[in-house]
Amino acid sequence: HDEIMRQRAAGRAILLISVQLDELAALADRILVMFNGRIMGEVSGDDADEERIGMMMAGVAAPEFAAETAS
Image 1 (cartoon, rainbow, N blue to C red):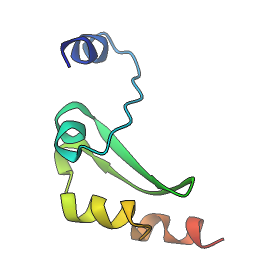
Image 2 (image 1 turned 135 degrees about the horizontal axis):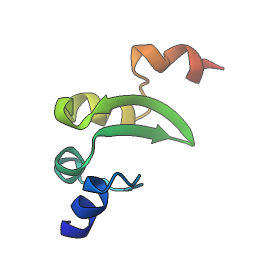
Image 3 (image 1 turned 90 degrees about the vertical axis):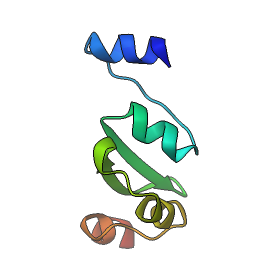
Image 4 (image 1 turned 60 degrees about the vertical axis):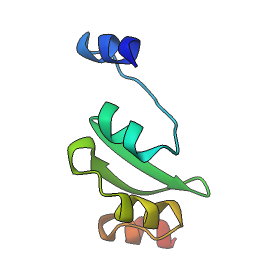
């Protein structure tokens, strides 16, 4: 995790794929949740809510993404 934090501090973009929600919340500025190749929602790392993220991981789109995933 130290290297990720160094790269982040240097302003580099990092793509981190994980199912460990506590890890994502600790390291991410923002979290995009995908299900079946579609983005179900986005939350900031500071506002990461395990229940909300879990619902998106199960295919329930966040309201702001619901219209996009319906098509």
